Length: 464
Image (cartoon, rainbow, N blue to C red; front, side, top):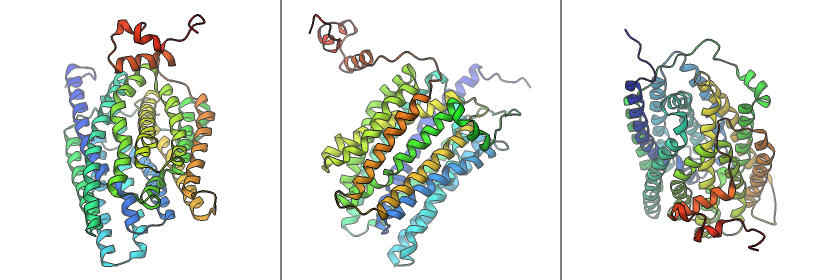
């Protein structure tokens, strides 16, 4: 039988179809996040979880999930990537069932004191199964998306998913407030988690239709975690991994507690809470096309460098006002733009840095170290809130400041050590920002250096 070439028209057509299916799959999978993942912390608060337990709800899944990726990377040695993904998503979806049962137990007053711990266990299992699919999915997508189109493609995929997330979040917030007013809040959570399970199973059906290129693992592709750690400080991808681990450590010192601060300290309703949270999604939808184009043109490193500044500033902005309007147009807008750009660039940086043969195992080790950072950061945040005794300000805000300072220091120290992989245009701040503004308001190209464009020109000695 004649072997079909990877770049043949037939294969290219199958890959194009797979890319389209993946966008639809991502939209359905996002419903799980909109109705499920987004409400795990509010659900934990409804079960009377403490700040320490909220921290564990982030830290344990954050560590165990990436560790499970190692098993996922080993599975693709003997199983097709599609089979691994289908298996993992099935069991991830089914983990919503025991989480839903916790609502029933709380309602009946059974094991009420231990329910927050059981939630940590079941949600950790949910995250573990989800992460089991990550190496296979990451490797799979790397072969169906062209190198030069990754920024634009994933920005489009993420944008559509974000729109779905906005719709889900709005619906969830209004219905949850209705259920809370009628003293049926746990029933509301149960309905949402059931919908999360159903839509994740529907997304699984789309994976069955998606073309999977055959992966041929050559001898010598494997390298141990010890080797990865040993060489990390000496190579570009290793330094990048260390940076992401440290920035996640700093982020999760405060990360699990923004929801706690809004729901408990500020007393927001679920509608207000979700509207504030929606800011990050809405502004990411608006910015994603520009971010994807910027990343493809000027590189992933430049994108990460700019977004890291906003990531460091974000926690400090919470100190100035507790107004929902301020939080919507201030901190949450900033974090939406920052993390959208950072995550898109970081994901593409991994694709650029690692060959297809080593991609699954490399991203596994990469995510394990990130998971360690998440675990330690969330634990530190929980310990600080449990044991610090300060009078001069709200302890949660103090933890936000610590997180901000740590983010800034880590980026200043680590980012200069990392180099861009692909050939890109040199970034000129003034020229790029001028063109972005002028194109946004549809000023014709020929006017860019005259009339309105004069406002963006650098002043000369004569013009002063």
